[in-house]
Image (cartoon, rainbow, N blue to C red; front, side, top):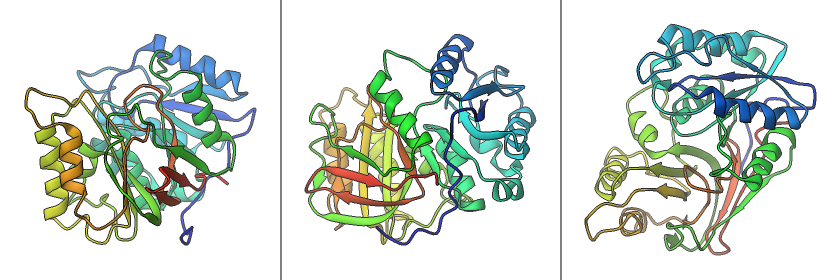
Length: 309
């Protein structure tokens, strides 16, 4: 594994209070109720943030309210973890309001994915905080069955490395360039990665294993995003690419999402591994982000050090 110089929050333990926050889009209380049931079953004490169920159009309340909930969670010594309810849109609107001194003073594990990539990038750049890329508290059993729950539980409540194997049934499974790469795992949702270019939150990907996943973006838009990353130099010096789920990304053209990923990533000269069940699709698994990883595209595995200590 490469050198580990990230800020790891303490592992969650039974009895710990975790705050459920909505930094992006509005959530459904009935889905969060299922998440609360799940977290409670692990011995945790989930507490919805004051504005967790707020709504303002496509946002979970005004920017000030969403930022206040995050800062309340980061500042409260009784809160030991932050579980985002869902993604959607809006995290980039509040990340500049985060009290990074509070994050550094008392680091807490932050879990979420999709639009939460923007929040995790900001926490990485502002505090070098390792995070957890996994399902939010607005839980859907039909998409995230017991295996998904077990994966999130392991990432939050154990300090064991996480290994994810490529799955033949995943659409991106054919995307592969054999080889082995070591580097810090950074990334998440492709849209949010490209939207971070030019902001203070865009991490330096030199030596990193880049994680990408996406939902409901046709192949030409994925092509455009990957081309943007290539042209701006963001992919110069990366160690490898971990390709997660590209869910509902088909359109009427002959070119498939697998074609685009193979063509845009296959000539980078680094190992590339597709077929990882990480993202918006069924049976989503959880991985730490910001910690050292080994991508073995020959063996078909991604192994990542824990985000917690």
